[in-house]
Image (tube, rainbow, N blue to C red; front, side):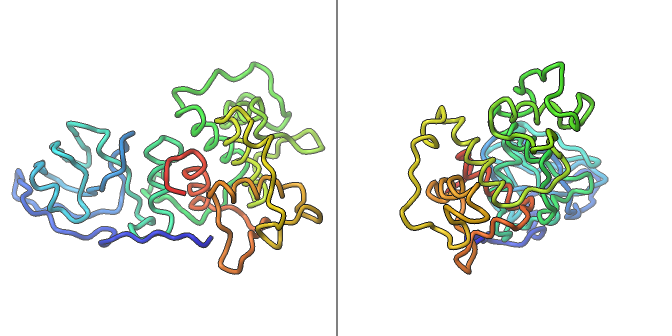
Length: 284
């Protein structure tokens, strides 16, 4: 994708000036998440310590990659954390440094409760996104998080996604909203990976939910297709309207070669960019 974002500073460096300690042991920078809040993204302090440390509010402004805190104190102890305002602390990932091209969008999705990392503290931005995962991300984004998800129906819409499937509630939600349908064989195929053509459909329909569907129903694509590889006829005609819609809305720019590449698999960093921009969580 053309758009990239650069951050300042190093991923896990920076001083710890004005940090008081109990026990005299210096903190060690450690690439693992410590907490997630629902507030505006700030910065993240990630430490591993055997003793209690208190980062004062006055010290926060001088801590390069430390964090967080707009006039709030943070006590970090024995791998745990106590925060006077948890909304000012967000996850940090060992494999998503500040200069990662999708850093802002990934962190926006994390802050909104749409996606989380793995137990080892990584986000794994290059992993492909499957159809069940996509249903989860879209559902959380539209409803405002797991706590706002409606109750799932008693009966399954797809024979391959039964009530005991981990993503059953989310798949039923996007199906009920008209965002995702099954395949001609009647199955949902939750394990199939999502390509960029399909992603445009997911995202465009989700955006239409927010506007009552009017925008997508009345959308007229440009006379000249934005991308030479997605035409109103041909192999990718089925996603043409949706690709043009998300492009016109500033959700995607395509690649440096001028193509959209609808056949390429969507990765977790790309997914975050699509969703964050589509739902207004990040700049388009």
